[in-house]
Amino acid sequence: MSNPNDRPSGRASVPSTPSGGRSGSTGGRARPPVNGGRGGGGTTYGQAPKPKKTIKPKWGRIALVAAVALLIFGGAVFGGIMLYSKNLDDKLTKVDPFSSIVGDRPLKTVDGAFNILLVGSDSRDPDAKPDAASQWRADTIVIVHIPADHQKAYLTSIPRDLRVHVPKSQTSPYGDTMAKINASFSWGGLPLAVQTVEEYTGVRIDHVVSIDFGGLKEVVDALGGVDMKVDKTIKSIHKPFRTYEKGTRHFNGAEALDYVRQRYQFADGDFARMKHQQMLLRALMDKAADSATLTDIGKLNNFLQTLTKAVTVDKDFSLADMVIQFRGLRSDKITFLTSPNVGSQTIDGESFVVGDKNKALAFYDAMGKDQLDAYFAAHPTATPSATQ
Image (cartoon, rainbow, N blue to C red):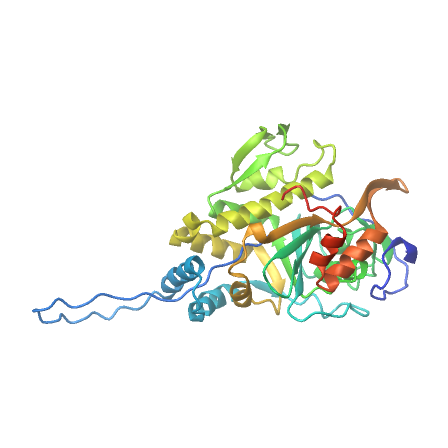
């Protein structure tokens, strides 16, 4: 049974019916471009114009070319943005993770600012539904905070082993107990994950994006791989037991996914893995926004189409809106953070990451009020992640 003193106050109310269970051990999204159109040729003087053949326009290619131009030159023509982004929107898998949440939710306090819950998931059952209780496991839990001015973003990683109160699941017999936060996803899918995060942080989640790690491998490959820095030489604990030499390395999709899953070879364990996951997100953003990607029509289209297959979003999420609002956002405007904690502790024979109650209250209060800049000015020791 939960103890209210174990978690920040001011959270959503939860059912009091006791239940059992515990989590198991478990293993980003790039911005799409915007678009417009292109012109044709002319008539040679002194010659009679030749009859023109009617050609069915290739709208997808036209829209994509214009999208690239708009991203590169920062124009203000949004018709093309809507055309191509709407096409991608229609291909996204959408669910409703909010309607089944029980109890009061945190209020939205600042218009224009919003928070996206980003969940990186692994599934032992490829047919498992991500919006319901299933065999899905959450390896990555990140709150993406976008300030009202939309000039930057804060990505806060929540350790998957963070000890929190998980509310009662509406779709399984589990919950209403202290557990690792990733148990919420396993026990109740995205709805319970949202409710658990909102209860712990007091921050209202506006959108949800779930990334299937299997699909993420294909996203990396669609970009031609990414470059990341390897902290130290390690050998993977997963088949085919790759060795990653210290230094900057080019990763294909399978290698990148394997590397960011490693933790036992590092003294700081899961914290090292979170740092590497943040590195992968940054590398994906940089590669997606690179001019070599933006000017390669086939590569860019393949990346975007692959991305739509790898993610599940809430039913109100609009890719077109995101493209318009954040077309100028690059990784140097993104701050990677980790939820305030005091490290790992063994409780009742199980290893947890324990939150720093006072720091977490202040940090998430600032996030909810869209005052993170002021928070960091007042707390200079609250340094960003080492991925900076």
